[in-house]
Amino acid sequence: MAKQDKDGKPMANTVIGTNITIEGEIRGEESLTILGTVKGKVSVAQGLTIEAGANVEADIEAQSVSVGGKLLGNVVARERLEVRPEGRMVGDAKAARIVIADGASFKGNVDMDV
Amino acid sequence: MAAKQTVLGQGTHVVGEVRGDDALVVYGRVEGRIDITDELTIEPGAIVQADVQARSVVVSGVLVGAITASESVRLTPKARVVGSIVAPKVGIEAGAGYRGRIEMGEVDVQRSQSAAASADRGRTATVAAKAPPRLASPAKAASVSAPAAPARPAAAPVAPPRAVSAPPRPTTVAAQAPAWARKKATKRR
Image 1 (cartoon, rainbow over the protein chains, first blue to last red):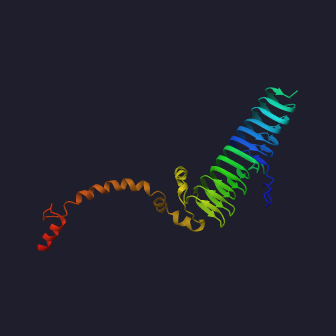
Image 2: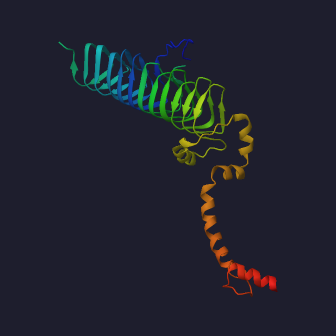
Image 3: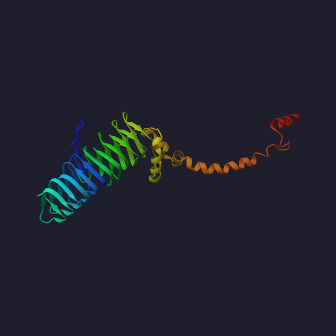
């Protein structure tokens, strides 16, 4: 369960569960974890984690992005993009630091602002 | 825990459609539509401008839109809701703010959606415990919830016979005579 104290400071990070589909735009001031399906556009101020099993078709803007599931779309990360071994990504990546793990699959342009 | 429950945090704003089979807890903002088969919880501080469909709905935040639940709807004291509610069980706790129309009894999804569209004007507030048994009998539920539709076709055939039966009433005494004359005639006889 998400924690919440009475005086309006709930530290509930956003989690999109395995059986949930969101179509449209997601904007956030906090971190976002996706286990389900998202189509559209995602922009978060902090970290975005796409877990194994997740399916994302969206353009993404975030501080840092970690891809463990399937991602179809362009990524702009202000800090770091990581495609984990189980990750599958098709799209252009723009970030200061990019990690593509051994075993990951990636198709697209990489722009590291050099 | 994370896999079975979806949380939209305080700083999260979703524009579009959320659907699926998990429970959903909203602390942030949602605009559009929510359509899930499990429980939906709208926490204090959350703002939801959406038509909502779920198994059960608990509202403690702000919700503007039609609510359809297959099981129950509960408005807690912190709830502020504008829009229709369609559910077998509806509970409004003291302190909740609500404006809209409530329909209890068996949920017929198709009808409830059309009702939801037109329902925003009504101002009815009924508290759960007493109402469901009253609406439980199907005949009564039908008469309560859909009076307008059957009434119109029934009225049409009734009218013509009355028009036909009206003239024969003044029998032998001059049928064309004015009312005062007829009265006189009957008196005289």
